[in-house]
Length: 302
Length: 274
Image (tube, rainbow over all chains, first blue to last red; front, top):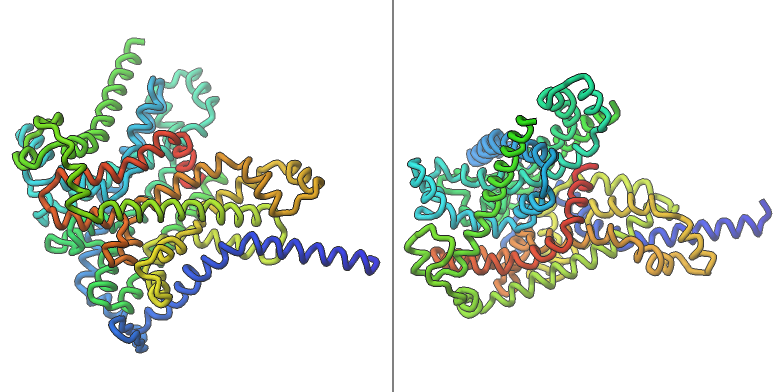
């Protein structure tokens, strides 16, 4: 390559590289300042005792924050609440989402209208939804009125530790199922029509088609929906916070992991311990996401 | 033939039933917002208010002088966050799709990794950095950390990968530089992708509760979700006020949703891992 051409080529490459970084600059600056640096900093601080009040001060405590978790009763309560929550909410919302999607995908008029209505809770803020449900759960509110009209027992939904978490579950199922319904609907469009046509020729009934074509085809999406649902339950905060005015009560019955982290960080001002808890939560969520990605990819390649 | 009509009937019943279940909480809230306190306290189950009144909507602005301020804070934050996101995510997505620069692969994988980190995890780190910058209780503290979004950088990259190259080549022949090409030729043609970004980012920012809760301690700087929560604490059994405030807060997003619901569905299926 002659010298001048080499020079020209080099200049063009540098210019292209520079342009690339100019386009990326806002993203790099913001991600650096508010994501990368603070995250690295926080992972380190999880091994420290951090004093937030007055002078900011740090003291290295090694694994003490992590050992403390095992002995912390409220961590176990939050984990138990999350497990109960996931065990009920995830299967219910998955089955509900799948059923709604299957029905909407059949020969029905007004699909679009139903879809628009069903999706409404998904666009409404969690704060507003929680307030609306608290109004419905009020001891002389709508839900109890309907229950007593049907001759069923009524509850103190907001104040009774035995039912408070169930109230949040009910609201969550109602507001999240439509989101997963839309994901199922998209997946249903991907099933080749020819499979159903072939089955019709073979004399398969509707039920057989559902069982042998549709459901097997939806397996990877179902896995995705379940894992996303579980991740969502681990992230639960807004509803519990508003429901219990930040306490996780009554009697810790609505305490979630993120709410616990919030309380340790901003009520007890125990930032080091809160960061250690965050680190554990991050590991759990990332493991779940990685497993989901791996399985999802594998299923798609099949 | 007969069995098919029979199942279709059941399907309609189920769909209508679920539509009612979806709508009842909203209608019940709307109804409460037009009832006087006496009717709320009496605990009736009538959806049509007996003594219809629009007083609640007026009273909340009087009883809570900060209500207008909260609405303004929410609007400022959501609009600026949306504008910055659309600009920055599109720029980064374009660079990753079209420009060959050293380290582009590394950045791309970092964005894929960032997709896995939910906001709850970065909450305390963000708080600590904002505290040390002295940005607690400021607009920039709420806006800048959320001015980019890994999901939409990734979406824009995918979009620009499928974008016809010929247009950019023609622009280059006309002597337009990279930036001019991007802003004058590429962005105006990326409207569908930008629309999806606008509604999701706006909605996310408008509805966000946790981040402002941590950043804003001064009631003057509350966004509406925080304001609603504080308002509820103060007027605990005044459900007519709380519901009126909730309705006002929901209307902008509802308007956005009714205009753009087509993009919503597309956006969900995209972010849903497709």
